[in-house]
Structures are given as C-alpha cells and as structure tokens.
View 1 (cartoon, rainbow, N blue to C red):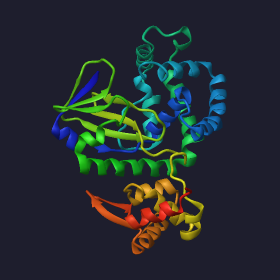
View 2: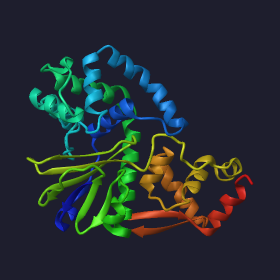
View 3: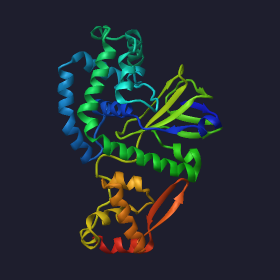
View 4: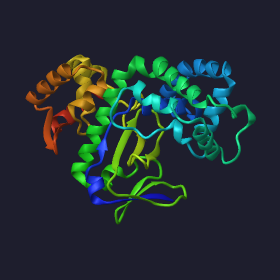
Length: 322
C-alpha cells in the first residue's frame, strides 16, 4: 500500500483549498473514464459526453494522450499538477502548458507502463493537454462554477466539523477509496504498492472536487503535497431528501426544503449549496424554524450547525407519505 509519514506539525498546518484546475481535471477524467452511478449522473454524461467525444474525434493525438495519461493505472503527473492553493485557472494551467516535452512523454510512459505509440512522439503534448483542459473549463465547468464552488466550500465546512469532533482520523478516513489513517503518523493514501514518503516541513493540502474522482500528487521541489478527493456534495439532486407536498404547502417549498435537509446537522454554507438558495434566504428560513421550535443550533469548532428538533422530526414525519 502507499502511505505517507506525516508528522504532527505538518498535519496541524494542513489546509483545505479549492482549485479550479483540479476541478477541471477531475471533470476531464470523469468524461474519459467515469461511469454513471445514478440517473442524474447519466443525464450529466448524456449532456456533455457527445461534445467531448466529438472534440477527441477531431484530434486523435489528444485523444490518445488523455486515454493513456488519465485512463491507466497511474495518472501522468504533468496532467495533475499539485495545487498551489492560489492563482487563477489560467495561471495554474500555464504549469501544464509549460511542461518540458521530454518530461511529459516520460510521465505518459510511466502511466502506460511502457513505450509510447509513435503518434505521441512529438513536442506539443503539453500544449495539447492544456488546450483540452481549457476547453473543459470553458465549456463545462465555468458556466456553473459558482454552484460547484458552493458545494466544495460546504464540503470543507463539513470536514472541519469532523475534524473538531473526531480529529484528523475522522476527517481523513474514507476521504478517497483506500485512504485511511493508520496511526503512528501514517496516512495510507491509496492501496497501491510504492515506497512510503516522509512529509516533514512540507505544505499539505486537501482539495475537494465535485466529480467522483480522486488522486494524490506532489511537487517535491516546492515541498507541496496534495490529496484531491470527491466532495460529499454532488451537482445533482438525486441524493437530496424529498419534500412532502403537504409540508411544502404548509411552510412554503423553500422553507420546507431547509427543514427536510436538517435531518442531520448542517451549516448555513452547506444549506446554501444544497438548496441553491441565497445566504440571506437560508438565514431567514432558519430564523423562522428556530423561533417555531422546529430547529435548533449548536456550535462545532468555528462553525454553527443547525438541526431538526424533536418537534421538527414529528412534523416532517406527519407530512410524509405513509
């Protein structure tokens, strides 16, 4: 298994960050390798995959590059640069575009596990990869980036709550498939077999993305390490609890939706992301629910979490079918 030796100071200084480039890369990997887990995801693929496939059909070199670089046992490192936690999408994309061609080919050979086909023996692979990531960003990610960002920020708030309640072990366990806290300052990052790495005096970042993709990356020269992981929120409504019609008529659909979501403690940031309502609207609904005794609140670390009271549970249960 692959694991990192993370000392206490490095872990204590770890940061959760949002990365536009990591989000675009995760979307690209989902388009290339992902499978729909539910009807809403299938609809997302049906919407975006035809244009993606046409884009690659028109550019067989880039098609082969991506299938090797993101579709194999190991991601090509230049396609998944370690997030910096700062800078614009264009500034971070420049790191992909400026990769030395020989380095890009070496990364692809590592991903493939052998020599590259003749088609990829050319100097413009980094430029082609960057162009495709830019296409994914502008065509798919950017139009709903505000919504995606709210989901990512809500996930970070939830992880912070886990951290305050159960420590790093609770926050990190199952963040990625095969990832768990082993104890003894050891973090298993995946089930693959490669030598452990010592993380002392480095910047450690945890980066949520909305697709169901995840990976680890590092830049040893810059002393940056990152875990990119699928966020707990999704872009679809498939996992959102249904609001009973009668409850919606009683409280109003928006306020009823907030009450239904309080089946588990949530922050205002999470509620904004899950409902799509503005912060002011969510705040007004919470005040009414608090005043009516249908919701309560408690502090968890730096966050305030809202939850349904017993009276709120009774009301939701009474209005639910059956």
